[in-house]
Length: 111
Image 1 (cartoon, one colour):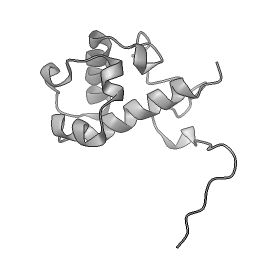
Image 2 (cartoon, one colour):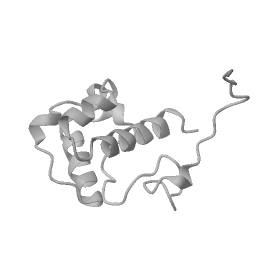
Image 3 (cartoon, one colour):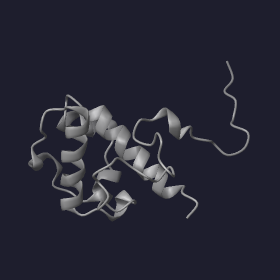
């Protein structure tokens, strides 16, 4: 079985992801987190904690102890899915996916 390479740029279907549905652009995010920088690489520790609180509230996840994410956005970029899961067994995949969507939106926005 041979793998085929993609022809042309990869297109993301942002409408498939609830965080970006009905948003003016892919880099737009959830309501109530407007004071987060759109680029997660610019996040401070406080921004990371604000993002955690917001995502756990929106998705009804248990509160995440802030001691598990004492890092800035650049450090989050270095985390693998397994690292998210080890810190948050219930919801780690969701946190990882949300963060990656935000990162991709920032990196590949046309602004």
